[in-house]
Amino acid sequence: MEQRMPAEGFAPGEFIAEELEERGWSQADLADILGKTPAMVNELIKGKRGITPETGEGLAGAFGTSAEYWTSLETAYQYWMLRKTQTRPLVSHRKAKLMSVAPYRELMRRGWIQRSGDIDVLEEQVLAFFGTDRFEDTMSSVMHAARRSTSYAEVSPALSAWLCRARQIAKGLHVEPFSKARLQAEMEKLKPLRQNCEEIRLIPQLLAEAGVRLVIVEHLTGTKVDGACLWLDDGSPVIALSIRYDRIDSFWHTLMHEIGHAINGDGDFVDSNLVGDDAASSDQKPVAENSADEYAVEFLVPQRELRRFVNNHAPLYYPKDIQGFSLRIGVHSGIVVGQLQHSGELEYYQYRKMLEKIRHIITDAALTDGWGSVVKVV
Image (cartoon, rainbow, N blue to C red; front, top):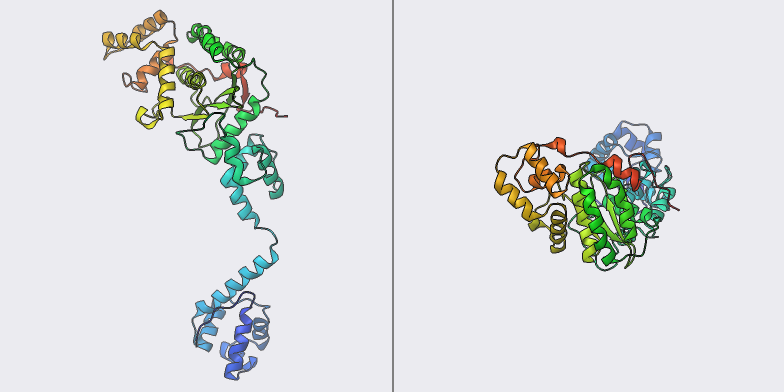
């Protein structure tokens, strides 16, 4: 027999009826062949009973086809019925699409959107979170640079949500009008703060006086973001830090790296792997990133002084020597250790006690969203 596929909307029972008519069989004849009751065959023909693999095997033997032919007819018909009764996409399809633009479960966990099991409510909240009415525009609503936009970190849905949150809460900060000259002048006031962990609590106010908004946003799962330099508009820079590594060297390097972007007038930059044993090499970064790195390391530890220290002490660096050098140049010893680790002079497991934790200090002084704290956005 020639195996045919049905046009949309035809139940397999109609094909069974055609086969019976061609052969001159009755429903009772087919029931006898299948070893089933006539009532069961009648239900098959009327579409009241689906074709199981077992029934498919029986029909294959009766009509000289394959069992897969009949089960495929049944599957195609069931899908057609499902599409016919669905006036909107399946909830699973809609949730998958929603997850492709935003990790909505983590957004609910962080309190950025309200918890809900209603897909309509979730979609509405996610779009409102990104400030757009189309899922296709969620990325552009985040990465719209005032001057230009670039990043060497992949902008995933989670990262775009992190950036969006940083923008949201930064808008609530009141700062002086931004001035590049004022920001550069404030850097002289920052230098004395490099020596003592407790002094970093003064940084948010110093930056605000130069027109720079500093926000702390705990990173989302899988983002590996350290910081970002964003612009609310052409004259409103935002520095967002994640404190992914709770260490004084990481904090200072990331902060100064982002300040370097702001001073250079760079557009939106997202930075990851700036420090630590997963730090990106210079040949992996755009020119602007390398420039910001150079600004950060020079501001924190004058590189001429560091090279002289290395030449005098390599390959053995004793704690008292590091502490003495740090005291002489006026920086915390953890900052020096961080640079020695990054340059390969020290292993990353060495002198980790000098890398003091600072998250509890900066989150107490700067606008912070994360670690149980949620900023209310009006």
